[in-house]
Length: 316
Ligand SMILES: [Mn+2]
Image 1 (cartoon, rainbow, N blue to C red):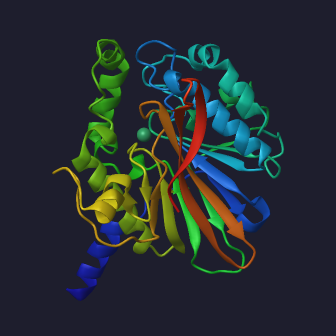
Image 2 (image 1 turned 45 degrees about the vertical axis):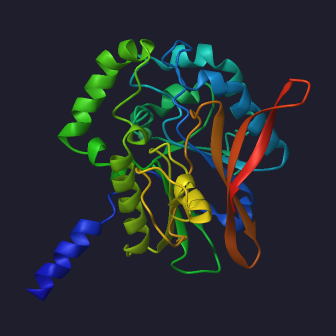
């Protein structure tokens, strides 16, 4: 009976199989910035990324000049709503020109690392299409950050749909059909996507909880998981609203109350927040665990009314 319980427990928390993995040595790589969920589209009303394009490019230019490696953690392209990548490339050519500055055909030298998500799962079997712009690029399901001096302290980066009940099994087929065939039209009429975890706090909570559990109960040496997908930024297992609640005791009914931070789980948020994007910076030091910082890049205004893009620290 005990043995049976053991098997059940292991099965329940088993990490899914991961196909294409990029291994990074954190000391060699140096500074890393992780962003996800751009959902770059065709520039129409259904393209949630378009209004943030300038903020995103400004953030990337700064990370480029400061020597960061950029990890794009899935759902960079909205390939459920758009039939071909060409439509997206034509709309966001400047973004791809900026990304190109991080790219090197040598996988050991490149500073542009691309991971697929559920909305751009297409890249899993069609990396050749992307290679037209980025010769030699490889696209992965996960990145593992290793600390050479430490055992069982690895950091796993995945998009996160692997932990979302809506994105696995039969429901996934339905939501993909729905988004591909009906959604873009409805969205042009101003509707918000109900299949995104971000629009459903319950699903976000469940996805966050699964990812956190994977980080604490795995036998593959992972100590921390970084994901995207929910569009809700998390720092040390607390969302921004949860962190605010702990500081101010102010919250809406929907905000779940967790009391203590936990370094097992972080979420990058998205690049489709209203006029802002979020990013997770990882800074390594020679003999210590890396430091994480959750950042928001957003528009701000000078007193004379002129706009600029600023980098704000949300946590860390
Ligand atoms: Mn996603």
